[in-house]
Image (tube, rainbow, N blue to C red):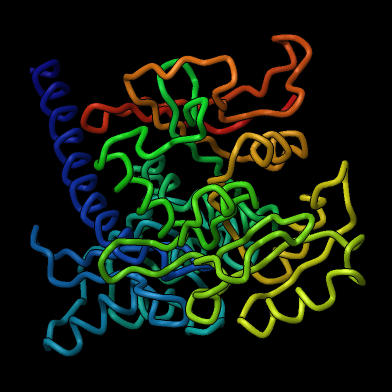
Length: 387
C-alpha cells in the first residue's frame, strides 16, 4: 500500500506540473504577440485561472501600454469577473515599481489572487526578487521557474539590455552548403527558399534595428523593411565609411518614412559637408566615428546607438561587416540559414571575410546551438562565446 500511494503521489504531482505548464505555454503564446512593439520593455503574457478554467488573459501590447497582468485584470473587470481566489500565470516576475505604469504587484494583491506562477525572474534591479517578496508578504503563494528556459528565451534581448546596457547583436546570413553567400558574379537572390526568408522577416520585427554595410546597399539597393502584415519596420543603420550611399537609393528616398541612420567617419566631415546636408534634408541621421582601419569604429558606434535606446541589432551585411563585428567582440548570436545547394568558386563570397583567425583554437565558438529545418533549408543558431 505505501508503495502504491507513493507512485500515485508522484503521478499526481506530475499531472499538476503538466497543468501548470499548459497555462504557462498559453501565457507564452500571448507574450509573443507583443514582439517588436514592447522594446525596450520585455514581452510578457499573463493568464488568470479558477477551477481549471481560464477567466482572463492579457499581454504587454506595446511600450507604454498596460502590462500583461493589468491587461488581464482589465478584461475581467470589464466583464464583471471576480478574480478572488484565482491563480495567475505570468511569464515574467511582476513589477513592483512605478514607471510608465503602476506596479503590477499592487493589482495582483487588490484582485485577491491566491497563487502566482512565474516563468522568468526579472533581472531589473528595481524588481529582481522584490516582486516575489511583496506578493509573499501579502499571503500570496508564489511558484517560480515554470517553463523557465522557454520564458527566458523570448526575452534574451531584454535580459541582455538590462544587465549590460548594450545592444544585443545578431549576425544573420544565408549561405549554400559550401559556405557561399553569393556566386562568383555577386548574384545572391535567392539562396534560401521563401519559408526561410519569411523567418528572417520575424527577426526584423524582433530586433529594434537592422544593420548593413554600404557594399550591400550598392549591390542590392534594398529597402531593409519588415514585410509582415501589421508589423513595424526596424531602424535602418548603414555603415558607410566614405559616405558613398546614393541619394537616389531606396534607403535614402524612404528615410522620412523609415528611421535611417548613416554611420560614417570623421575624416571626411569637411569634404562631405554638402552630402551630409543633403542626406539630413532627406531624413537621414548622420553618426560620425573615428576611422578604424579605414572603417567606421563599430564599438564607438554601438555606444552612440546605446544612447539612442537601441537595444538590439540584426546585422544582415556582408563578410567584411560581419568580420568587424566579430573582431570587436560585439556579436551575441548567430543565425545561419543553410540551403542544400552548392555554388563553388574560389572567388565566391563567404559570410565572414577579413583576415580571419590564425588557428582553429582562436575560432569564435557558439554554445546552446539549435538546428531547425525550414522547408528545404536549415537554420543553425547559437550564442557566441568569447575567450
